[in-house]
Structures are given as structure tokens and as C-alpha cells.
Image (cartoon, rainbow, N blue to C red; front, side, top):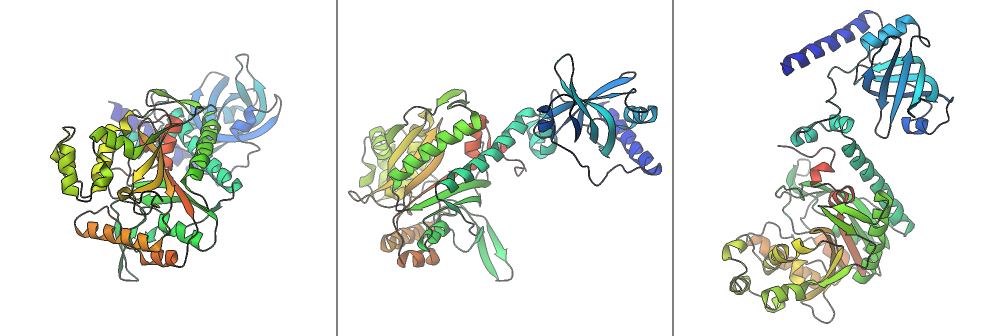
Length: 487
């Protein structure tokens, strides 16, 4: 029955379009000159003459006086239309030919109703665009998650939460660029289509470059190119980079995602800790209006000093082993399983010592962190692009910030020693040959830049989508990406 009703309504709306064309009217006009947006109109004084436009989301038709509401992404405004202000033909046309979902332009004076509703008293109106399909039911919207992702435009129309999420995402990106620019960073762009898999431990997408007859990969991270820009003389650079990783999907991972990386010459990772702490506090305050926000059913407080956890010491404490002493992955797996905390099956997919350590961290440390926490002092085997610690080359000067089990960023003092870097990438290449499809390839262009000399550098990267989830208290990355890829 519902399908029959919908089909009937669609037929009626199509007939209206045909009737408009038959009468020489234009159902889809080319433009409308407005004097202000709906949000701006709501802030103007009563009596101000305005020309506004938007989508009709509500109609209440009465005898000689009717009301409707128009909306855009930022605001809603009530419109009244009366037989006393428009002639009989125009009023009849509105009642019979204009529907919810249509776009309309309205000219008139602002006033406030006795209930306090800002309203435009219609003097003239223009039907701008006729909708064939009806809008989702306003009070329930698109309740099916799959439908919300597939029909994002209707989700935005019917769901105020979704509107707020994507407005905040846009404002965050504006804040990000302003914050970094005022701190001396320059925005640059690096290739998405690359010839070497480097910059992160991840499985890439591959594609064929027909003109060059060459297999290329889509960017997994912008790191190696941004460090080459630093080597070229730029002191501070950043990029808002679309990246692609051909891995599993879950609420905190998507194959296509937005990443930000920044690099500063002459900094070490402690400088980046201080800078990121300032950045994230200002971001939370700017987007949320407060430093105490809800996330994953918890209350997260960014105003307090961030706790610090020594990553290597914490893993050692859990296992009762010194993970830095191991060089053979099979021996390491055996000793970890002997603790009784894991089975050998848990490590079936782990090809390296770093992979085993990372699994221990994810199972035993990450999920227990709620408040903003800085993890630092990582084993060198985890990140081949990070600078080795001066006192113990088995460790790297790296940190991450976690909130409610989510990793908000990863940063370290960068490895700029070309000899050590080549050795690390050669080890990665061996691991790749041995079946580790997340290992990096040896990037000669990157090494060539490093061999010509790089200054001391510290870089930081974070996923925009994951951060927006926290800032808007959303559970899934799909809730903060306008058009996530669907099956």
C-alpha cells in the first residue's frame, strides 16, 4: 500500500511538471537573486525587506492564510502567504502546484509572530525547482543506516544531526588551515598516484598507468614526499591528503580516508607534543565550544594535563618480558604465548616482531585508555621512518595521543640518517618478499633526497575522519564522510 501511495504521488508531481511546461512556465529556473541567506535573515530586524530562497520542508495550507518553512544547510525560516498579500491566482497556484521538497524564492518583509517565530510575509514568490520524489518523513528521516549513507542528500535534508556533523567538519578544516598557517606552515600538494609503496605500514590499491605502461599505487600516506619538500628548503609544510588503504572495513577504518600530516624542520617529537596539545585543545574549543565533551558514552576532558604512558615499559610490564631483546619473531611469539595471555592462533597474521607487539598493545593497552593520553617511547621495529633514540637505538622518539581507545595522531622525530634509513627500508623489502603485504617498498627518490641532506625534522599525522567522530560524538567513520563507498 505504501508503495502504491508513493507511486501515485510521483505520478501527480510529474503531471504538475508537465502542466507547468504546457502552460509556458519554467519548472526549473536558471537562478534567483537573494539578498541574504536564511541564517542572515533570521538576524535582521522586523520590517526588513528580503529576498530569500530554500527548499520547502513544511506546509500548512489553510483558507486565506497558509504557512510553510524553507531550509538550507544552516537555518530554517517560516514563510506566510496570504490572500491579502498575493492575488487569488498566485495563492491558488501555491496551494495546488507547490509541494514539500520544491525549491522556492520568496520576497517580502520580516516579522515575528506572537509565538516568537521569525517569518517572511510573502509579497512575491517564484517556484525555482520542482521535486518529483517526496522528502523523507521529517520526524523520522532515514532511519536505516545503509539508506542514510546511500542517500546522503536526503539524510542532510531530514536529519539535523547529520547537518551539524558536516558543518562542523567543514569548520574544522577551515580552523586547521588557519591554525597551521598562522604558525608558519605552508600547505602543499603531493601525488596520489605513486610508484612506490612507502610512508606507512598498509596494504595499497594498485592501478595501471596506461601511458607509461606502469603499475602504480594509490597513496597510503604523504610522508615521504612531504619530507622531500622539507629537504628542498621549506621549513614547515602540511597537506590535507586523501589516502587509500586496501584493508578491512569497520567503524574506525575506511579504505578511502582524509589524512593530515605536518612536518617542521628543527623540531623534535617533544616540540610536536607541545604543538599538538595546543592544537587539539583549540580545535575542541572552537568546534564544540567547551573542553569537556561526550564521546563513546564517556566524558572526555581536554582541559587537564594529558597523562603520559611509556609504551615499551607498559608492554614489558604486561608480558613480563623485554620486547627490545628479541630479534627472532618465532622465538618472540613462543615466549609471549608462554605468558598465558595469548594463543599462537592470535599471532597467525603477524609476520614481524613489530606486528606481535602491536597486537599486544591493541588487546591490552589501547582499549583501556579513556582520557587524553600521550603514549611515547616505542620499539624501533614498529616504525622504520622514525629516528632512533640516541641512548638506545632499539627505541624511537615517537608518540601517539589516544582518547577512548582511538588513536588521534601519530608523530615522531624523523629519521634523516640515509644509511640507517636505507637499512630499515631494505628490511621492509625483505618482509614484503616474505609475505608481509603491509611492509614498505624501497623508495630510491626518497633516499636520494635524504642522501643530499635533510635537517632535523619532526612530523605528525592524523586521520580527519576519526577526529571528526570524536568532535561530533559519532560512532562510525561513515557518519562523518559524506559519501562512503558502499557494497
